[in-house]
Length: 152
Ligand code: FES
Image 1 (cartoon, rainbow, N blue to C red):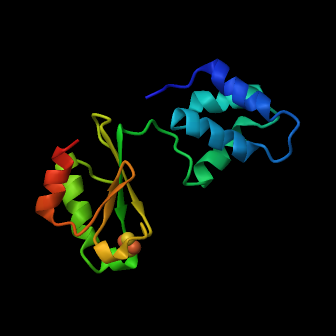
Image 2 (image 1 turned 120 degrees about the vertical axis):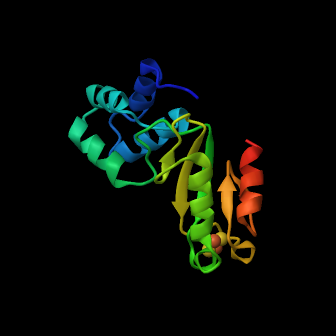
């Protein structure tokens, strides 16, 4: 995983000089390139733009699309939409948390997985569903969840 390199962050910020309403596009492009927006990155953005650190921090923490911590190598999205909820999405969550030794959504201590929840993954007929690195896994049971996780 990349770590932010000052020159690249600065390059991105400079691309938006004199453009109105540039903060969100700047943050989106930085996250796209570096996976997350650290405190140090916020300082660099502020030093090279018209935006105060506190304003940038406010935007980054307001929108859930922005990550402030380095994500794990693999991303797991657990669907908590209605169809999945009524088909034991909570059990899916419990098994994943147990297997990955997580107390809450977030990144495992070995930085291998980041676990998030989403409203609906758009494949409700396969409920309960999770997505790992963009691939959908449906009709989940505790046993097949454990087998799937061992693949990573
Ligand atoms: S509710 Fe889970 S995929 Fe739609």
